[in-house]
Image (cartoon, rainbow, N blue to C red; front, top):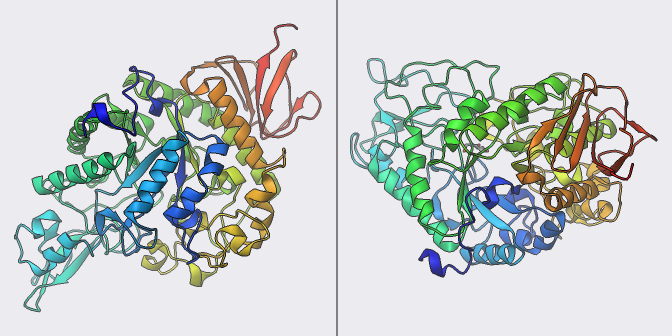
Length: 562
Ligand code: NOJ
């Protein structure tokens, strides 16, 4: 496909005006979005059927979590065939239909690329298992001899991010106990060896496959983990750190400098295509300053701002991370990005009101102390969203946050499916609580997720009142708030604006101007007065006369006639 004859994509925008600099990107977790065939697991036709609702919400792009062929040991982040659709989700033709339906409505599509590891069912890993040590088949992955007299000990002490050892021993073709392979995640997710040129070439082929099909970009899984320190020295992470990384001194398998060469190579490949295709990296680093290395001008376009996601609901901390993000990303010519929720973290409606927060990946279970009251928590969640969507740059929304969904901490033990739950023997409940299928219609089976009432995780009864059909026409609903914020953000150009802080509202209040909009986020715990002569454009919670409640964000415009 030559850039000039691409039916899907317009020519590149002027530098600085590319869509990904200001887009609001909605994350779809396909197994939990909408289920057209009624088997209890969402699918691609389900998404296509809801494209109108997504357009109505007012987002610019969709990021689809993996739907490629996979035994689903880690909900699709264990890919067996990178260039096909798993029958659970549909077919390649269903994907083409989805892409066409999205593009027809002006919505871009980003797919998830999982380059750190494959599934153990991938043909390459199957070949590696039957091949001999040191063979080319083994060298696509990270096989090593064990320590100890008979190699009975793993090559080092690295632990899997999901718990337990990061190495598994194989049985050789002759039946003897043999080498060990590295898996930073589940034992069903062997890590590729990215020093091998064959691996690099294979991923170029995979990128081209999806680009030629017309996708607008990729979300790159574990973008900080592909290259490992070749010493393979023992390493023990800080148990308080996020499970996916982010320690001050990076682990020997995260943030290794060599990883950047890979993205420079991919950037060149993307640049051969028209339409501003984009790479968005999932890099759990310790700070926005280190994260900015991933979005230097010849690398990725965006990276998720996890420091923002992890910030508590506290004015000084939020201001600091916003300022540092603008400066760190701006310093390399990249847009600021903002995110509050995704499929790996506790939904922000719940998380921002917890009195103590477990490390990312641990999750909260039925016995977790201090589960907040929903009616209060949702107001804080809405205020946080109204603050985030007022910031210039690109923002991510995770499916269901527009309905104000909370974390399902009370899932029954027998329904849990996160590998973390199994690999820690239930000590960590894991991430299922943010992955429960969406409620669409309060009065339908499975709240309209499908027609059969099947659901791979049970939906809580309390979600009936949060179903989309209940919120659709209610001007006070979370859904109406998201729609209003997204419409104004687009109409008033906030994504391409700039922040100018306004002082004087006192501690605990964040106030700034972005274009003509004045944003006041009241995080102080006390009401504050609305400035005089201001027209309220949108508020996350009704005002009390001239008072802005605690846990409320307001967007205003100075009324010049006053
Ligand atoms: C990050 C993904 O977001 C997460 O869901 C997955 O388990 C790991 N990477 C491993 O692929």
